[in-house]
Image (cartoon, rainbow, N blue to C red; front, side, top):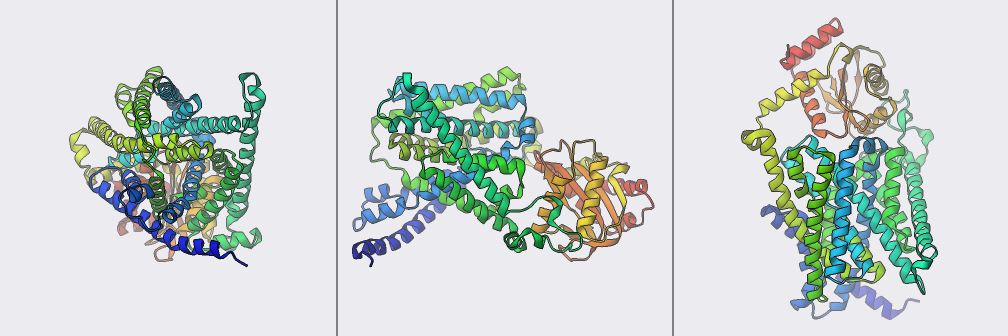
Length: 616
């Protein structure tokens, strides 16, 4: 029989939870829109919206006289989402830990990252200890949080200004590596804090047994849970190689022998969304289990992501990048984080801590990056811009602060870090925008910066395509009557004729996943199967011709006689888009398609392409 008191509280809380969730999300949305209009970072507006709709502000202005406790409890019940969100962020970092990607990061990015992380950690920690008289563990935890950054904010600006090349690649590598290093140091320090708090007595003489071994044990168990998440994802999302599609059933992208659950996932019209559900569920269960036992749940999620990146399919990471879903998750995250910010414990001491953190983190980022650039003898223009692009902070820093404060019972850590995040979001974006605008004007000239004419872009894309083609790039004897077989012929030809280290398994896997999500039949007898690969240094293009045609699906579901395979490197997505545009531009002319269908040999076929592209 239910307790009437408990039922009464629950009945009272549910409508308050509903109203609180709506109020937080609406306030965050409006705050984000306002900041967008003012050309300020949207996450900062969402965070401020959450603060305004949070319990502290509403209590302060007297809006909640009737049920203050219920509203506080309702908003507090949403905090689990913060940890779920950052677990997914830590999992997605695993994509950047692919072995081939780590090998291509290069010495320069690694050295710059290490210098910057070390200087920032030392300056912030020492500043808080010496000037703020903060305890060592508390100060070093905030120092570790100071290392992490917000690469997504910087890349929004890079995309808007159309900045490519070395600066973009270096910036992305350094910021991702800083997040990884910061999370690792933070995880170890939090575990040290937990062990110290749980021990009756602690001394440096017993550090090995009281601190080192428990920390290693907790990290080991967290890694084991990460392995378990990987095993679950590998079992539930079966997407390995050519076994996805049997040659005898080309219109289906699944094999009945793979099991009911796999077939259920594969048969849905939007497999990426289905994979998203499985990923969120698996990561939440694993990270929640680790969190319950006070294990480093960020390490759990990052290990699972690392294993998926190296031993399974990248479609899993693609599912986390669905635009509408990711935007909604970000909105909810910043709304709830904002609601946790309280100023009732704010005093002059906390204000001093915030000032020290902001000043010394900014100084550490500038000095550390400058030292790294000097050590690796980076180009002067890159070195002059790079140190001022390291300021933005967002999701990872916010959750680390809340997690440490909750686990260690220390409200000072989030009280210092969360307000500072707003400062770094706003100031960092303004600084990054100005620096990157200056960089863009240096490398392109003011006229190019203001407007890149479409005609010039088309010519550049055509030239890029022609540079990738030779008679070996043409295959006129495609024979297989089904889509899988035709794609396999094209991929095998690309592997056989390329001078890069490439096997057919990964491109086949990614192309088939892409075909399952959205067929690449473009109409007018054209198909453009394509994917991006980590292993490629430069793009590979193969033009194929099938005399009878192959049904690819897509726009008109008619047989395709002209099939173009594009494999490009994952590090330069703009090149992939430009090559697709150039191919579409050439094959968009009916006369060109007719000439290609009637070309007697590879040399004639290639010459028709060159003429259509404006080449010699």
